[in-house]
Image 1 (cartoon, rainbow, N blue to C red):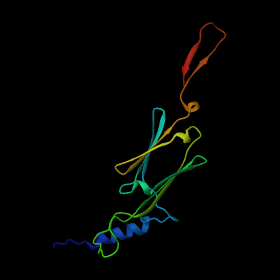
Image 2 (cartoon, rainbow, N blue to C red; image 1 turned 180 degrees about the vertical axis):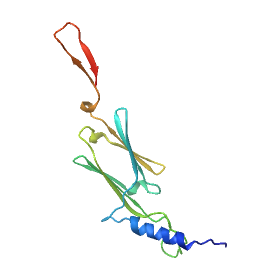
Image 3 (tube, rainbow, N blue to C red; image 1 turned 90 degrees about the vertical axis):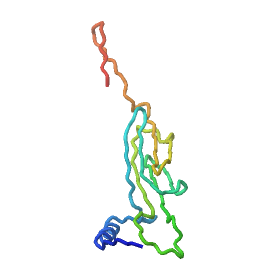
Image 4 (cartoon, helix red, strand yellow; image 1 turned 135 degrees about the vertical axis):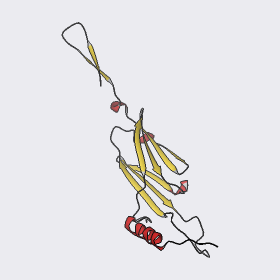
Length: 146
């Protein structure tokens, strides 16, 4: 078997793990990358969770604080296995989002596909753009878009 080793790369990887705390625990979870954007009448948040079993994902909401926790467990048995390379982070990942009062938290929809957890949160009626009419002493009215 031909092996190519680079001791500096391995040292860099180990240093990165220590500095960034890649392996999270339930008491000290690691953050997960996300994208958040508004489209139409909903707010969308997408979390990257590759390799996480859907049963290992928890979604909780309390007082407009959304908490997402996920755990990536080892995919290979730990007994009788001599690991050669282990670069995929394992452990607990967590993220909290503070949602505004303009979102309808009772109607959050969650979908997990291809390692991406996507949450769709509807925007409340009172937060949607609307037109306000301005009256004047004259017979004509002007309408301004807000």
